[in-house]
View 1 (cartoon, rainbow, N blue to C red):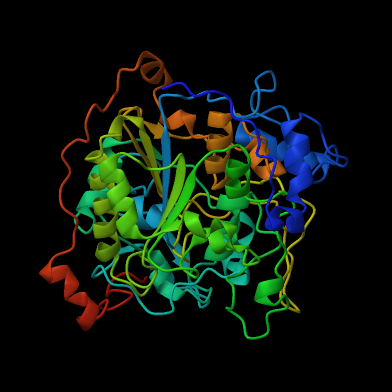
View 2: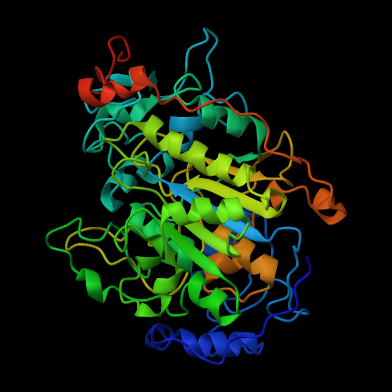
Length: 483
C-alpha cells in the first residue's frame, strides 16, 4: 500500500544531540548541505578507484538523498513493506559458498582438484580441504585488524596460513553439510561481490551496518586488556545511526535479540539512552510478529551469539537451523509478499577467500583507533573479505547471481533508497543499494516471482552432526591436504 511522505519528528533524542546528529538530521530533512560536506573523503585518485569499483562515475555526498527531487520520507518501493536483516558471523564466501554450483567460488585444475591454496612459512603448501565435521576449532581462525591485514598481504591473499588462523583457514563446507543454506542459495539470488565493510572483526563491521562507519573501531569491544579507547567512550557516529534516521521520519524499527544489551547490534554504540528500549524485542517476539504480519518497517534479528551465530567454535548446523526457522517464519507470514529478508555475515572470520577486497571510500575523517605499535595500514579505504549473502523475497530475481559490489552499508543504501532518506556517511551515500537482487519490473507489476516460499530441505542439524559438539572438529588439517 502506498504511504504518504513522512516528515521528521520535531523531538530529537539526547543521543542524537550528543552525537551531533540532531543538526545533521534537521539540515538533511531541509535539503541543506551542512558545512564541510564538500570535503572529499580521501585523495582524488583513491576516490576515483573506489568509485570505479562501485561502477560509479559520480561521488554522492553525505546528507544527500537518492532522489533529490522527491521529499525525504517518500516511499519509492511500496511493494516492499518490511526489510529484515539477519547477519550471522565469521565465514567467508569461499568457506561457505565456495562449492556452490554457481557464483564465483572455488575453481578446479585440469585434474579436477581445487586450485585454492596458501603457503606455510617453510614453503609447504596447504591446500583447501573439506572440513571433517560441522564443528570448528576454538580460537581459530582469527580476523583481528592485524591478522586480517596479514591475510590480505597487500592483495596477494597468501597470508592466511601464516597468520594466527593457521591451516584451518583453508577449510570449507559443502551442501552436504549445509543442505538448507545451499538450497536457499540455489533458489534465491546471491551476491558474489558482497564484501564486509572493514578488514576487522565483528563489532566494527556491525557498526558499519547500522551507521555507515565504525567511528574508528577496528577490533571488538573488550578484546584487548589494554584497549586504547575504553569501551564506553568509543566515539559516536557524527550523524547518528539508521535507527535515529528511521525514528526521525516516523518509520518503525526493531532489534529482535536473544540477549540484551550485549547481544543487540543496535547497542554497538554503547552511549545510548533509554528511549529506544521499546524497540528491543525478543526472538519470540519476532516469530509472533512474523506470524501476525506485523513486522516493523525495518528490523535486525540477533541470534544467540554463543550457539546460533556460526562463529567458531560453534557447530555451524545449529546456526543453520536458526536460519531455517527465520526463513520459514517469514515464508509462512501473511506479509510474505511484502517482506524482504537479507541474509549475510558480518566478516570472514579468518577463513580464506580468493577475491582481493577492492578499494573503498573512507566513511568520514576518523582514522583507525589502533593499539600502540599497530599499523594504520590503508585506514578505512579498503573493504574486508567477501562474505556470503542471500536475498529472500517474493520479488527476488530468479536464477540470479549479483556481481555488483556491495558491502554492509548497502543495507543502509537500500533503506535510504526505499524511503528517500539522507545518507549518513560517504560510504553509504555511494553504496550500491541491493535492488539488483530484486525483479523491479515484477515488483512494479505486483506479480511476485516467488508467490510462496518454495519447498526447502531441513537443516543439517541431526544426531550425527550434533555429535561433533562433544567429539570435536576432527583432524585439522586432514591428512593429504599439505604438499
